[in-house]
Amino acid sequence: MTTAAPVRSGVAPQDPRDPHNPRARRRRTLRRALPLYVAISPFYLLFAVFGLFPILFSIVLSFTDWDGMGDMSFVGLAQYQFLLSDGRFWNAVGNTFIIWFLSTIPMLFLAMVIAFLLHQNIRFTKFYRVAFFLPNVTSMVAMAIVFGSVFSDTFGLINSALTAVGLDSVPWLSSPWGIKVTIAIMVIWRFTGYNAIIYLAGLQSIPTDLYDAAKVDGASLWQVFFRVTIPMMRPIILFTVITSTIGGLSLFTEPQVLLGDSGGAGEAGMTIVLYQYNQAFTQFDFGYGSAIAWALFLIAAVFSIINWRLVSGRGDDAPRRSSRTKEARR
Image 1 (tube, rainbow, N blue to C red):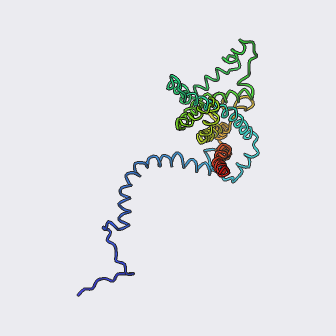
Image 2: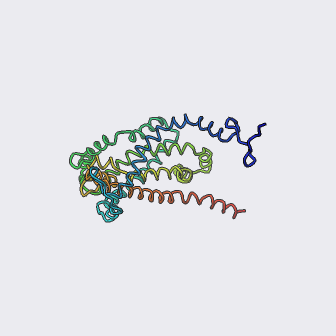
Image 3: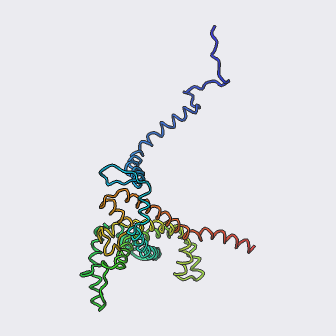
């Protein structure tokens, strides 16, 4: 006569084929999800190889002295210490911020005005949208060559027009401020239409009842723009300010094609990314180039946080003030 095996802890073992077994459910879920993970795995593999690995490797490089050929030598924080005392780096930082200020504020204002006008009932709206967005998809290298011809000191179209009306020519590409203004105009020309399309999408999401109420109250077009459109567009404005800040601090193609690796006269067009490119791929100082890259990341992060606080701060306080006002009226 045989006896059943004792059950430990008073719990009967679960059959792995039981559909209510947690392990069986996890295996079934894994089998169902496995094809989905396999389908999206190429993106993550490519990102790991060409995105994540270079980022992590650049962190390691910033603590070394390496020319890309010999052995790496660990130098600790020496690259960052030299960066803090590097006058050329701080000159590039100053140039970048000046160009950002000259380009971003007029660009976003013009983009908002263009989007507001395109949002009205006008003819050929689709044509205008394509026309304003076209500069963003145009080759920047080709347009930098065109801008170099337009703003040339000797045979440029701008100076020819100024001379024709009796004015003095402007040294656009040979003076510090001329170089900065030229690069800023290139940035405005390229990204105004892009931001206008984003603003237009935000305008189309605003309820039309607000505009109807403003018209009933007798508000003018500019009153509607500043008192209805701008407050409702605050999240979109915040997005464009942050993206434009990151893009403005990462300027490279415009000064590099227009002025060359030297950054023009007196390095007036030397931006942070152009200086990083020179150090890494001209001087072959990959360690210092990586340190500049992470310094740029820190500057962009801090500047984006400041912009986020300035643009969204009052918008976050508005509901509190309105609720306090309603309570006071009660």
